[in-house]
Image (cartoon, rainbow, N blue to C red; front, side):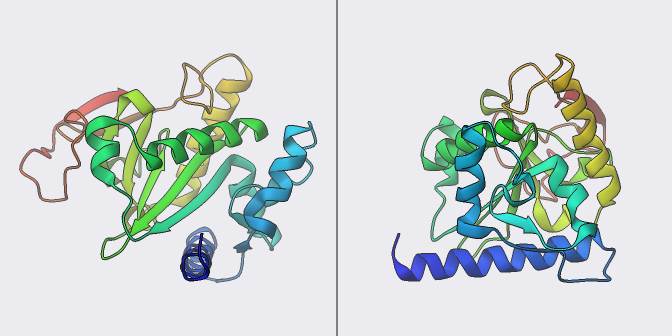
Length: 224
């Protein structure tokens, strides 16, 4: 990765830190989170050896204020900002670099017993949030479901307008299920929470924009 790409990635991580801080603090603080040391590399290396003491520094985002710890106790966050994420490969063929990034994020989240979150952005587009599920509050933020990769694709900006406590509670429930033999944070049959989403959002793997006539207001029960 060149210097320009690293600078671009770091700038995006700082923006996400600010946005998450405002979300979790209810607008009171921009400084709950900051970029992890080596983008979480040190914590991941230790976790592979069985040492998860740096769990609040895992992933790309670290908590620098006690108020921010709870969210990162539940979620493992990665940030990706590229000129092109080649979303067509993800949505239509479930292959490509982004699919590989998601699988790696799931695997690393599992090391810490957390739920994986990937916040992604490509040039000229608004950011998206990839997850295994979500909360009742975030159901209307879902653009698409890619069952093969266990991905729910949300509008990140819309998620930031929901209740963060509900989102965290849903993640905690999924982690608890995983610890007790339910659904796992790797997307297999452990730890998923049930979420109501609008019928038509998960049409194959097609990304449906807000206002698309196929996004009806009827509710459909999906297992996340």
